[in-house]
Every structure is written in structure tokens, then in C-alpha cells.
Length: 117
Image (spheres, rainbow, N blue to C red):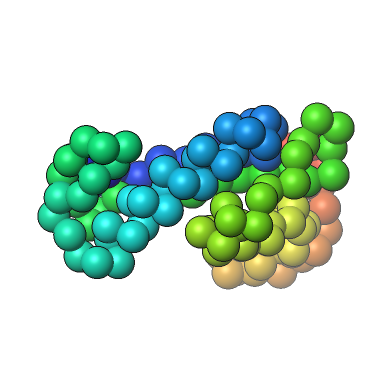
């Protein structure tokens, strides 16, 4: 919060639920300070500076063994974004077409096979 940096916490749902509830409380304190536009705020009984550029992001892979469901209090602090694997064939075909190639579909298939090796 003092430095204004962004943090990305990968595989966040692998953290034990007891630790996640502590994270929830701490991050909510930071967000409350941001919403109130404070330059300084109390974080665990210590007054620290707060820069408006601070932000945290988390990644999760739900459904795998050893993954916990996030507590509702923590879910409410983050916006969900879904991601999927891109279709490399279509991307390659469009890039080839944009460069002026006329047999894009055939070339795209060959490129994708080559890159998967």
C-alpha cells in the first residue's frame, strides 16, 4: 500500500481457508482506505501511507485437488474474469490474411502443427 505497486498472487485458492480469511480482512482494510481517499490509514494498528496506484490481482484454478473455495468475504473484494485457451489456428489465419497471403487456412494449419511440435 505504501509503494503503490500492483501484486498478482497466483493459485490463490491453494492457500488454507484460515489464511484466506486473514487476507480478506487485510485487503479490505486497504480497499477501504482507497475508497475513503486517505493518504494514511491504520493497517493492523500501525499507521502507514497509501498510494492510489496500489492494486492486487489473484489467479485461481478451481476444481483441481487441493484447491479451496474462496470465502464470500474475499470473493466480494475481487472482480471475476474468465479466461480460455485461444484458437491459434484462427489467430494465425487472420495474421496471415492481414499480411496478404491468399492460402491462409492451409498455411495457418501448417504453422500451428509446427509450433505444437
